[in-house]
Length: 325
Image 1 (cartoon, helix red, strand yellow):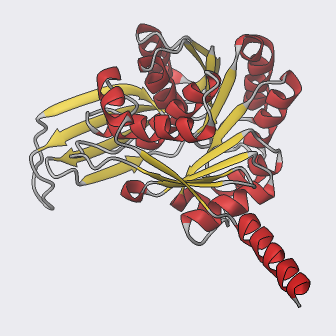
Image 2 (cartoon, one colour):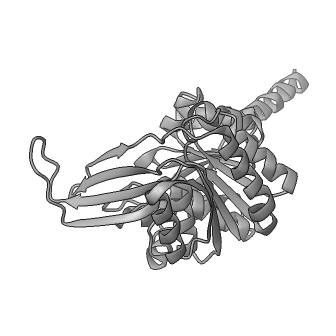
Image 3 (cartoon, one colour):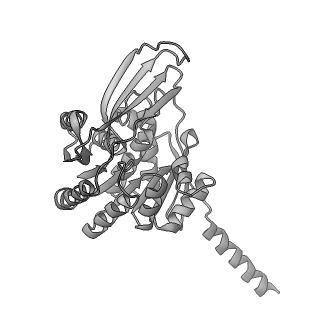
């Protein structure tokens, strides 16, 4: 089972309108309300790809009760710790041209004791059944940045491979805990101090502790490295409906493929295809299996020369010159 951990979930409300116009009343053509946050979106996408999932959450209030009930109806297998504060809501408005506005409420403050209870639930009830773990999203207000690092350490103790998708100080701490995979967007990498291009950020994250680092960069695709090999991922060109959740779907596709023993190159293609399939519909983490299969053959994954390869080539050239002299 794939376990997805989201300590700061949200009720996601996504509205499709004809056109985003300032100072105008916008009347939705369609509204989708889903249990949200990165972990739940990844779980939704993974389930669409045919993998049984379970999710671990921190929730509270009426919104939290709804979120757990709705997750159960979707077959996401939620287990939750009660926070004592109302779960937040996120709002996305997207128009026919795929322009979007996203408003993410901050969470109310959660006590460290609640997070400790969450870690205890993860260790005792979720990790024993997990084949892989995705730990994703933000940390609730009041929880120190080492929260995701603590999750990675629990996974390591249990011998479970773990993908992390977060940002800022939480990402830096999590990378230092040496997760199996880090999958982040370029802005998320930059917010954690892993700046530069997607390639530079991926190489920096791998050097800092991740066994595999993947940095996505919107329509430009992604770059990934395991510290020895380097890959560029070029996604298919599609007509985007809503790109919200595509990064979470990428993480799900990547982990689903890795859990099935696929090579890294194929797993990266699975991730990119899942991200593209998500962008074809409204609602984060939603995708059709047929869309994923259709996009999979259109993804290009190529290996690039890494700095290590270049260095080795330079050393061979220097030795040849010495021998020839």
